[in-house]
Amino acid sequence: QVQLVESGGGLVQAGGSLRLACAFSGGTFAFTWYPMGWFRQAPGQEREFVAAMSRSGLVTRYADSVKGRFTLSRDNDKNTWYLHLNSLKPEDTAVYFCAAKRGSVASSSLYTAANQYDYRGEGTQVTVSS
Image 1: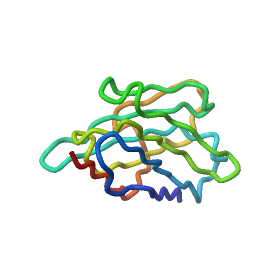
Image 2 (image 1 turned 180 degrees about the vertical axis):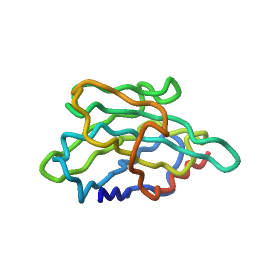
Image 3 (image 1 turned 45 degrees about the vertical axis):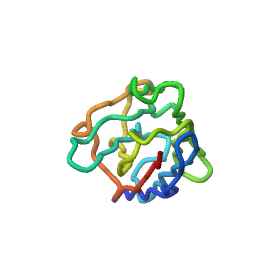
Image 4 (image 1 turned 90 degrees about the vertical axis):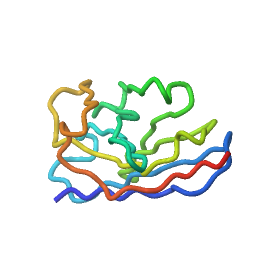
């Protein structure tokens, strides 16, 4: 069974940076067969899409609210995806979740809806102070 574990959250001042990690384990297929995404949920708000990466790693998409500030990357040797958060704003405060979709044949497909994913981590809290 796939397991996803997020880490790297914390308290940071506005304008600061964090690097979130999503460690993958237990998959039937190799790590690189899973498209993935990041979502966030602030108190009292619905979960929202943040960023997604195709299984090839070559195609990415970002929500307009984070475009130019957040960047996706991955380390195939460590079976880990990363979300680099720069120029953080107080409105970025939320619990951040990573999600993975069961092995996809299409190497460039992206998924931006949480219900399109099969696996999800428990989340990591990001708090940005003003």
